[in-house]
Image (cartoon, rainbow, N blue to C red; front, side, top):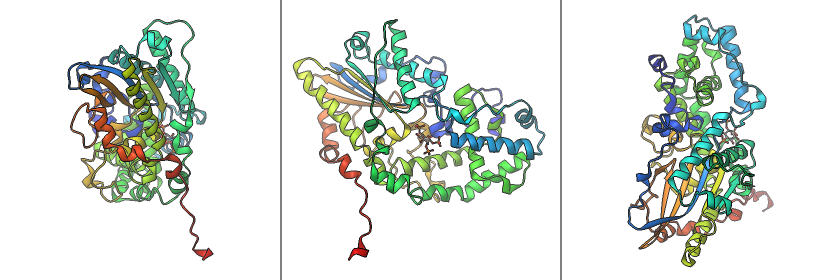
Length: 438
Ligand SMILES: O=P(O)(O)O[C@H]1[C@H](OP(=O)(O)O)[C@@H](OP(=O)(O)O)[C@H](O)[C@@H](O)[C@H]1OP(=O)(O)O
Protein backbone atom coordinates (compact mmCIF):
# COMPACT_ATOMS: atom_id res chain seq x y z
CA UNK A 1 0.00 0.00 0.00
CA UNK A 2 0.99 3.66 -0.28
CA UNK A 3 1.25 3.79 3.49
CA UNK A 4 3.74 0.92 3.36
CA UNK A 5 5.84 2.69 0.76
CA UNK A 6 6.12 5.62 3.10
CA UNK A 7 6.94 3.59 6.18
CA UNK A 8 9.94 5.70 7.18
CA UNK A 9 7.97 8.85 7.23
CA UNK A 10 5.98 9.82 10.29
CA UNK A 11 3.32 11.30 8.03
CA UNK A 12 0.81 8.79 6.65
CA UNK A 13 0.76 8.89 2.86
CA UNK A 14 -3.00 9.42 3.04
CA UNK A 15 -2.84 12.37 5.47
CA UNK A 16 -4.19 14.79 2.86
CA UNK A 17 -7.53 12.99 2.77
CA UNK A 18 -8.60 13.18 6.41
CA UNK A 19 -11.22 15.88 5.81
CA UNK A 20 -12.47 17.49 9.03
CA UNK A 21 -10.20 15.12 10.96
CA UNK A 22 -7.13 16.51 9.23
CA UNK A 23 -4.14 18.28 10.67
CA UNK A 24 -3.71 22.03 9.94
CA UNK A 25 -0.09 21.40 8.94
CA UNK A 26 -1.20 19.37 5.90
CA UNK A 27 -2.88 22.51 4.55
CA UNK A 28 0.19 24.65 5.28
CA UNK A 29 3.15 22.22 5.14
CA UNK A 30 5.72 25.02 5.69
CA UNK A 31 4.58 24.93 9.33
CA UNK A 32 6.05 21.46 9.80
CA UNK A 33 9.56 22.95 9.95
CA UNK A 34 8.61 26.12 11.74
CA UNK A 35 5.22 26.27 13.39
CA UNK A 36 5.53 30.02 13.97
CA UNK A 37 6.46 31.03 10.43
CA UNK A 38 4.25 33.48 8.56
CA UNK A 39 4.36 34.83 5.03
CA UNK A 40 3.78 38.54 5.45
CA UNK A 41 4.23 39.27 1.77
CA UNK A 42 0.92 37.51 1.05
CA UNK A 43 -0.84 40.18 3.03
CA UNK A 44 -0.21 43.13 0.73
CA UNK A 45 -3.69 44.36 -0.15
CA UNK A 46 -2.41 45.21 -3.62
CA UNK A 47 -2.38 48.95 -3.06
CA UNK A 48 0.06 51.28 -1.42
CA UNK A 49 -0.64 53.28 1.62
CA UNK A 50 -2.88 50.85 3.48
CA UNK A 51 -3.19 50.35 7.23
CA UNK A 52 -5.00 47.39 8.76
CA UNK A 53 -7.65 48.82 11.11
CA UNK A 54 -9.66 45.75 12.12
CA UNK A 55 -9.39 41.96 12.04
CA UNK A 56 -12.15 39.43 12.68
CA UNK A 57 -11.01 35.81 12.89
CA UNK A 58 -13.54 32.96 12.97
CA UNK A 59 -11.65 29.84 14.03
CA UNK A 60 -12.46 26.16 14.42
CA UNK A 61 -11.34 24.54 17.69
CA UNK A 62 -8.01 22.69 17.66
CA UNK A 63 -7.28 18.96 17.41
CA UNK A 64 -9.69 16.92 19.50
CA UNK A 65 -10.42 13.37 20.61
CA UNK A 66 -12.95 11.35 18.64
CA UNK A 67 -16.60 11.60 19.65
CA UNK A 68 -18.04 8.74 21.75
CA UNK A 69 -19.99 7.43 18.75
CA UNK A 70 -16.75 6.91 16.85
CA UNK A 71 -14.78 5.60 19.84
CA UNK A 72 -17.37 2.81 20.15
CA UNK A 73 -16.87 1.93 16.48
CA UNK A 74 -13.10 1.90 16.92
CA UNK A 75 -13.49 -0.47 19.86
CA UNK A 76 -15.64 -2.81 17.74
CA UNK A 77 -13.06 -2.81 14.97
CA UNK A 78 -10.21 -3.47 17.40
CA UNK A 79 -12.13 -6.42 18.93
CA UNK A 80 -12.76 -7.81 15.47
CA UNK A 81 -9.08 -7.58 14.55
CA UNK A 82 -8.09 -9.30 17.79
CA UNK A 83 -10.66 -12.08 17.48
CA UNK A 84 -11.09 -12.74 13.78
CA UNK A 85 -8.14 -11.51 11.76
CA UNK A 86 -6.01 -14.35 10.37
CA UNK A 87 -3.33 -12.20 8.80
CA UNK A 88 0.11 -12.55 10.41
CA UNK A 89 1.84 -9.68 8.62
CA UNK A 90 4.16 -7.65 10.79
CA UNK A 91 1.98 -4.51 10.88
CA UNK A 92 -1.08 -6.51 11.88
CA UNK A 93 0.82 -8.40 14.56
CA UNK A 94 1.90 -4.98 15.79
CA UNK A 95 -1.76 -3.93 16.13
CA UNK A 96 -2.58 -7.16 17.94
CA UNK A 97 0.35 -7.28 20.33
CA UNK A 98 1.67 -3.74 20.76
CA UNK A 99 -1.09 -1.26 19.92
CA UNK A 100 -3.50 -0.52 22.72
CA UNK A 101 -7.05 0.72 22.49
CA UNK A 102 -6.43 3.79 24.63
CA UNK A 103 -9.49 5.83 23.61
CA UNK A 104 -12.25 5.88 26.24
CA UNK A 105 -15.85 7.03 25.88
CA UNK A 106 -15.41 9.96 28.23
CA UNK A 107 -12.90 11.62 25.86
CA UNK A 108 -15.91 12.51 23.70
CA UNK A 109 -14.60 15.24 21.41
CA UNK A 110 -12.52 17.02 24.05
CA UNK A 111 -9.55 19.16 23.05
CA UNK A 112 -6.17 17.40 23.20
CA UNK A 113 -2.79 18.97 24.03
CA UNK A 114 -1.95 19.22 20.32
CA UNK A 115 -5.22 21.14 19.96
CA UNK A 116 -4.10 23.64 22.61
CA UNK A 117 -0.86 24.06 20.71
CA UNK A 118 -2.78 24.59 17.47
CA UNK A 119 -4.39 27.66 19.04
CA UNK A 120 -1.35 28.89 20.98
CA UNK A 121 0.69 28.87 17.77
CA UNK A 122 -2.05 30.34 15.60
CA UNK A 123 -2.33 33.23 18.09
CA UNK A 124 1.38 33.97 17.78
CA UNK A 125 1.25 33.81 13.98
CA UNK A 126 -1.73 36.17 13.81
CA UNK A 127 0.03 38.55 16.19
CA UNK A 128 3.05 38.47 13.88
CA UNK A 129 0.87 39.13 10.84
CA UNK A 130 -1.04 42.01 12.44
CA UNK A 131 1.33 43.49 15.02
CA UNK A 132 -0.39 46.86 15.23
CA UNK A 133 -3.80 45.29 15.94
CA UNK A 134 -3.02 42.12 17.84
CA UNK A 135 -0.81 43.92 20.33
CA UNK A 136 -0.20 43.85 24.05
CA UNK A 137 -1.47 47.40 24.33
CA UNK A 138 -4.74 46.51 22.59
CA UNK A 139 -5.15 43.45 24.80
CA UNK A 140 -4.68 45.56 27.93
CA UNK A 141 -7.10 48.20 26.72
CA UNK A 142 -9.74 45.54 25.88
CA UNK A 143 -9.64 46.25 22.16
CA UNK A 144 -9.33 42.50 21.48
CA UNK A 145 -12.59 40.61 22.05
CA UNK A 146 -12.95 36.89 22.52
CA UNK A 147 -16.18 35.02 21.77
CA UNK A 148 -16.67 31.26 21.80
CA UNK A 149 -19.16 28.41 21.49
CA UNK A 150 -19.97 26.89 24.88
CA UNK A 151 -18.58 23.47 23.91
CA UNK A 152 -15.59 22.43 26.03
CA UNK A 153 -13.26 22.02 23.01
CA UNK A 154 -13.99 25.58 21.90
CA UNK A 155 -13.67 27.18 25.34
CA UNK A 156 -10.39 25.32 25.89
CA UNK A 157 -9.20 26.48 22.46
CA UNK A 158 -9.86 30.16 23.13
CA UNK A 159 -8.10 29.91 26.49
CA UNK A 160 -5.11 28.35 24.71
CA UNK A 161 -5.21 31.14 22.10
CA UNK A 162 -5.05 33.71 24.90
CA UNK A 163 -2.20 31.77 26.55
CA UNK A 164 -0.30 32.02 23.27
CA UNK A 165 -0.61 35.81 23.34
CA UNK A 166 0.24 36.12 27.03
CA UNK A 167 3.37 34.00 26.60
CA UNK A 168 4.41 35.99 23.57
CA UNK A 169 4.16 39.26 25.46
CA UNK A 170 5.34 37.75 28.74
CA UNK A 171 2.24 39.03 30.49
CA UNK A 172 1.87 37.33 33.86
CA UNK A 173 -1.12 39.11 35.36
CA UNK A 174 -4.65 37.71 35.15
CA UNK A 175 -5.45 36.87 31.55
CA UNK A 176 -8.19 38.23 29.31
CA UNK A 177 -11.76 36.97 29.50
CA UNK A 178 -14.06 35.49 26.88
CA UNK A 179 -17.80 35.51 26.24
CA UNK A 180 -19.77 32.39 25.43
CA UNK A 181 -22.23 33.06 22.63
CA UNK A 182 -24.01 30.01 21.18
CA UNK A 183 -26.46 32.15 19.28
CA UNK A 184 -23.53 33.22 17.12
CA UNK A 185 -21.17 30.26 17.24
CA UNK A 186 -23.70 27.40 17.42
CA UNK A 187 -26.48 28.96 15.33
CA UNK A 188 -27.23 25.49 13.89
CA UNK A 189 -28.57 24.39 17.31
CA UNK A 190 -31.03 27.28 17.40
CA UNK A 191 -32.31 27.18 13.82
CA UNK A 192 -35.59 25.25 14.01
CA UNK A 193 -35.90 24.77 10.27
CA UNK A 194 -32.40 23.32 10.09
CA UNK A 195 -33.12 20.98 13.00
CA UNK A 196 -36.40 19.78 11.45
CA UNK A 197 -35.36 19.61 7.80
CA UNK A 198 -31.76 18.42 8.12
CA UNK A 199 -30.56 17.40 11.58
CA UNK A 200 -33.63 15.27 12.44
CA UNK A 201 -34.63 14.37 8.90
CA UNK A 202 -33.46 10.92 7.88
CA UNK A 203 -33.69 11.70 4.16
CA UNK A 204 -31.55 14.87 4.34
CA UNK A 205 -28.32 12.87 4.16
CA UNK A 206 -29.63 10.34 1.66
CA UNK A 207 -26.63 10.86 -0.65
CA UNK A 208 -24.33 9.89 2.21
CA UNK A 209 -26.29 6.69 2.87
CA UNK A 210 -26.33 5.86 -0.83
CA UNK A 211 -22.58 6.36 -1.09
CA UNK A 212 -22.05 4.07 1.89
CA UNK A 213 -23.81 1.39 -0.17
CA UNK A 214 -22.00 2.27 -3.43
CA UNK A 215 -19.72 0.10 -5.54
CA UNK A 216 -16.76 2.35 -4.63
CA UNK A 217 -17.33 1.73 -0.93
CA UNK A 218 -17.87 -2.01 -1.48
CA UNK A 219 -14.41 -2.24 -3.05
CA UNK A 220 -12.82 -0.52 -0.05
CA UNK A 221 -14.68 -2.90 2.29
CA UNK A 222 -13.53 -5.96 0.33
CA UNK A 223 -9.91 -4.79 0.17
CA UNK A 224 -9.94 -4.26 3.92
CA UNK A 225 -11.48 -7.70 4.56
CA UNK A 226 -8.77 -9.22 2.32
CA UNK A 227 -6.04 -7.39 4.20
CA UNK A 228 -7.36 -8.56 7.56
CA UNK A 229 -8.26 -12.00 6.23
CA UNK A 230 -11.75 -11.94 7.65
CA UNK A 231 -15.06 -12.85 5.96
CA UNK A 232 -16.41 -10.03 3.73
CA UNK A 233 -19.66 -9.72 5.62
CA UNK A 234 -17.84 -8.67 8.80
CA UNK A 235 -16.53 -5.44 7.32
CA UNK A 236 -19.24 -2.79 7.23
CA UNK A 237 -18.80 0.80 5.97
CA UNK A 238 -18.84 1.99 9.60
CA UNK A 239 -15.91 -0.30 10.45
CA UNK A 240 -13.98 0.88 7.39
CA UNK A 241 -14.53 4.41 8.59
CA UNK A 242 -13.46 3.47 12.12
CA UNK A 243 -10.12 2.24 10.76
CA UNK A 244 -9.68 5.41 8.72
CA UNK A 245 -10.46 7.48 11.82
CA UNK A 246 -7.95 5.46 13.86
CA UNK A 247 -5.27 6.28 11.29
CA UNK A 248 -6.23 9.98 11.31
CA UNK A 249 -6.57 10.36 15.10
CA UNK A 250 -3.32 8.56 15.91
CA UNK A 251 -1.65 10.99 13.56
CA UNK A 252 -3.46 14.18 14.57
CA UNK A 253 -3.18 13.54 18.31
CA UNK A 254 0.09 11.64 18.65
CA UNK A 255 1.90 12.43 15.37
CA UNK A 256 2.09 8.70 14.68
CA UNK A 257 2.00 6.95 11.33
CA UNK A 258 0.08 4.11 12.94
CA UNK A 259 -0.18 0.53 11.62
CA UNK A 260 -3.91 1.18 11.04
CA UNK A 261 -2.91 3.36 8.10
CA UNK A 262 -1.65 0.22 6.31
CA UNK A 263 -5.23 -0.73 5.65
CA UNK A 264 -5.64 2.01 3.04
CA UNK A 265 -4.09 3.04 -0.23
CA UNK A 266 -4.61 6.41 -1.85
CA UNK A 267 -7.68 5.33 -3.82
CA UNK A 268 -9.37 4.05 -0.66
CA UNK A 269 -8.56 7.31 1.09
CA UNK A 270 -10.11 9.31 -1.75
CA UNK A 271 -13.33 7.32 -1.42
CA UNK A 272 -13.44 7.91 2.33
CA UNK A 273 -12.59 11.57 1.92
CA UNK A 274 -15.52 11.86 -0.48
CA UNK A 275 -17.80 10.17 2.03
CA UNK A 276 -16.91 12.79 4.63
CA UNK A 277 -17.24 15.62 2.10
CA UNK A 278 -20.72 14.36 1.21
CA UNK A 279 -21.71 14.57 4.90
CA UNK A 280 -20.36 18.11 5.16
CA UNK A 281 -21.93 19.16 1.85
CA UNK A 282 -25.41 17.93 2.75
CA UNK A 283 -25.31 18.84 6.44
CA UNK A 284 -23.32 22.07 6.40
CA UNK A 285 -22.75 23.12 2.80
CA UNK A 286 -24.69 23.71 -0.41
CA UNK A 287 -26.77 20.51 -0.16
CA UNK A 288 -29.72 22.24 1.51
CA UNK A 289 -30.35 26.01 1.44
CA UNK A 290 -31.08 26.17 5.13
CA UNK A 291 -27.57 24.92 5.94
CA UNK A 292 -25.99 28.12 4.74
CA UNK A 293 -28.89 30.39 5.66
CA UNK A 294 -28.72 29.26 9.27
CA UNK A 295 -25.49 31.30 9.43
CA UNK A 296 -27.23 34.61 8.56
CA UNK A 297 -26.83 35.70 12.16
CA UNK A 298 -23.05 35.26 12.04
CA UNK A 299 -22.87 36.93 8.62
CA UNK A 300 -24.67 40.03 9.93
CA UNK A 301 -22.58 40.08 13.08
CA UNK A 302 -19.43 40.10 10.92
CA UNK A 303 -20.60 42.93 8.68
CA UNK A 304 -21.93 44.95 11.63
CA UNK A 305 -18.48 44.73 13.14
CA UNK A 306 -16.82 45.80 9.89
CA UNK A 307 -19.35 48.62 9.40
CA UNK A 308 -18.69 49.85 12.92
CA UNK A 309 -14.93 49.92 12.33
CA UNK A 310 -15.50 51.62 8.95
CA UNK A 311 -17.60 54.29 10.65
CA UNK A 312 -15.28 54.82 13.60
CA UNK A 313 -12.13 55.23 11.52
CA UNK A 314 -13.60 58.44 10.15
CA UNK A 315 -13.18 59.84 13.64
CA UNK A 316 -9.72 58.36 13.93
CA UNK A 317 -10.30 55.56 16.47
CA UNK A 318 -11.59 52.01 16.02
CA UNK A 319 -12.86 50.68 19.34
CA UNK A 320 -12.53 46.97 18.53
CA UNK A 321 -9.20 46.20 16.87
CA UNK A 322 -9.54 42.40 16.80
CA UNK A 323 -12.37 39.93 17.30
CA UNK A 324 -11.53 36.28 17.89
CA UNK A 325 -14.47 33.88 17.53
CA UNK A 326 -14.11 30.15 18.12
CA UNK A 327 -16.57 27.55 16.85
CA UNK A 328 -16.93 24.35 14.87
CA UNK A 329 -16.62 23.01 11.35
CA UNK A 330 -20.39 23.42 11.35
CA UNK A 331 -19.92 27.13 12.14
CA UNK A 332 -17.35 27.83 9.41
CA UNK A 333 -18.76 25.79 6.52
CA UNK A 334 -22.27 27.30 6.43
CA UNK A 335 -20.81 30.83 6.47
CA UNK A 336 -18.39 30.00 3.66
CA UNK A 337 -21.28 28.57 1.66
CA UNK A 338 -23.49 31.58 2.41
CA UNK A 339 -20.75 33.81 1.02
CA UNK A 340 -20.43 31.67 -2.11
CA UNK A 341 -17.03 30.07 -1.55
CA UNK A 342 -16.22 26.58 -2.90
CA UNK A 343 -19.38 26.22 -4.93
CA UNK A 344 -18.98 23.51 -7.57
CA UNK A 345 -21.06 23.56 -10.72
CA UNK A 346 -22.32 20.06 -10.09
CA UNK A 347 -23.63 19.07 -6.67
CA UNK A 348 -21.79 16.33 -4.79
CA UNK A 349 -23.89 13.18 -5.00
CA UNK A 350 -23.45 9.47 -4.33
CA UNK A 351 -23.16 8.62 -8.01
CA UNK A 352 -20.71 11.24 -9.24
CA UNK A 353 -17.56 10.45 -7.25
CA UNK A 354 -15.68 9.87 -10.52
CA UNK A 355 -16.39 13.31 -11.91
CA UNK A 356 -15.76 15.11 -8.61
CA UNK A 357 -11.99 14.59 -8.44
CA UNK A 358 -11.40 18.26 -9.21
CA UNK A 359 -14.13 19.61 -6.91
CA UNK A 360 -13.44 22.75 -4.91
CA UNK A 361 -15.55 21.56 -1.95
CA UNK A 362 -12.79 19.57 -0.29
CA UNK A 363 -12.97 19.75 3.49
CA UNK A 364 -9.42 18.42 3.89
CA UNK A 365 -8.30 21.80 2.49
CA UNK A 366 -11.03 23.98 4.00
CA UNK A 367 -11.75 22.89 7.58
CA UNK A 368 -8.93 20.95 9.24
CA UNK A 369 -8.56 21.45 13.00
CA UNK A 370 -7.94 25.14 13.84
CA UNK A 371 -9.17 26.20 10.38
CA UNK A 372 -9.68 29.96 10.27
CA UNK A 373 -11.48 32.65 8.31
CA UNK A 374 -9.76 36.00 8.72
CA UNK A 375 -11.32 39.26 7.50
CA UNK A 376 -8.95 42.24 7.43
CA UNK A 377 -10.25 45.76 6.98
CA UNK A 378 -7.69 48.26 5.63
CA UNK A 379 -7.78 52.02 5.50
CA UNK A 380 -6.18 52.92 2.17
CA UNK A 381 -5.71 56.23 0.37
CA UNK A 382 -8.50 55.39 -2.09
CA UNK A 383 -10.92 54.13 0.60
CA UNK A 384 -11.50 51.10 2.81
CA UNK A 385 -10.54 47.64 1.53
CA UNK A 386 -11.36 44.15 2.76
CA UNK A 387 -9.14 41.11 2.45
CA UNK A 388 -10.14 37.55 3.21
CA UNK A 389 -7.72 34.84 4.30
CA UNK A 390 -8.64 31.18 4.63
CA UNK A 391 -6.16 29.25 6.74
CA UNK A 392 -3.71 32.16 6.45
CA UNK A 393 -3.83 32.24 2.65
CA UNK A 394 -5.57 35.07 0.77
CA UNK A 395 -8.66 33.99 -1.11
CA UNK A 396 -10.63 36.19 -3.49
CA UNK A 397 -14.30 36.77 -2.78
CA UNK A 398 -16.42 34.95 -5.37
CA UNK A 399 -17.02 37.20 -8.42
CA UNK A 400 -14.60 39.90 -7.29
CA UNK A 401 -11.30 39.85 -9.09
CA UNK A 402 -9.16 41.64 -6.54
CA UNK A 403 -7.09 40.44 -3.58
CA UNK A 404 -8.47 43.20 -1.38
CA UNK A 405 -11.41 44.91 -3.06
CA UNK A 406 -12.91 48.17 -1.86
CA UNK A 407 -15.12 47.46 1.14
CA UNK A 408 -18.01 49.07 -0.73
CA UNK A 409 -17.56 46.60 -3.59
CA UNK A 410 -17.81 43.70 -1.15
CA UNK A 411 -20.93 45.21 0.40
CA UNK A 412 -22.41 45.68 -3.06
CA UNK A 413 -21.67 42.04 -3.95
CA UNK A 414 -23.45 40.82 -0.82
CA UNK A 415 -26.19 43.47 -0.91
CA UNK A 416 -29.03 40.95 -1.03
CA UNK A 417 -27.73 39.10 2.00
CA UNK A 418 -27.03 42.38 3.79
CA UNK A 419 -30.60 43.54 3.25
CA UNK A 420 -32.23 40.18 3.90
CA UNK A 421 -30.91 36.94 5.32
CA UNK A 422 -32.92 37.27 8.49
CA UNK A 423 -32.12 34.44 10.89
CA UNK A 424 -35.59 34.45 12.51
CA UNK A 425 -37.33 34.33 9.16
CA UNK A 426 -35.03 31.83 7.46
CA UNK A 427 -35.15 29.50 10.46
CA UNK A 428 -38.92 29.46 10.86
CA UNK A 429 -39.99 25.82 10.65
CA UNK A 430 -41.54 24.74 7.35
CA UNK A 431 -45.33 24.85 7.46
CA UNK A 432 -46.86 21.49 8.27
CA UNK A 433 -49.02 20.00 5.52
CA UNK A 434 -52.45 21.47 6.21
CA UNK A 435 -54.32 19.79 3.38
CA UNK A 436 -56.25 17.73 5.83
CA UNK A 437 -57.86 20.90 7.23
CA UNK A 438 -59.36 21.90 3.90
O1 LIG B 1 -18.19 12.25 13.05
P1 LIG B 1 -18.08 13.02 14.33
O2 LIG B 1 -18.79 12.37 15.48
O3 LIG B 1 -16.66 13.36 14.65
O4 LIG B 1 -18.90 14.40 14.06
C1 LIG B 1 -18.84 15.49 14.96
C2 LIG B 1 -18.44 16.73 14.20
O5 LIG B 1 -17.20 16.51 13.57
P2 LIG B 1 -16.99 16.64 11.98
O6 LIG B 1 -18.13 15.98 11.26
O7 LIG B 1 -16.95 18.11 11.71
O8 LIG B 1 -15.68 15.97 11.75
C3 LIG B 1 -18.32 17.89 15.17
O9 LIG B 1 -17.80 19.06 14.54
P3 LIG B 1 -16.50 19.80 15.19
O10 LIG B 1 -16.12 20.91 14.26
O11 LIG B 1 -16.92 20.33 16.54
O12 LIG B 1 -15.40 18.77 15.31
C4 LIG B 1 -19.71 18.15 15.69
O13 LIG B 1 -19.71 19.24 16.56
C5 LIG B 1 -20.25 16.93 16.45
O14 LIG B 1 -21.59 17.21 16.79
C6 LIG B 1 -20.14 15.63 15.68
O15 LIG B 1 -21.22 15.54 14.70
P4 LIG B 1 -22.21 14.33 14.52
O16 LIG B 1 -22.11 13.99 13.08
O17 LIG B 1 -23.54 14.95 14.87
O18 LIG B 1 -21.86 13.22 15.42
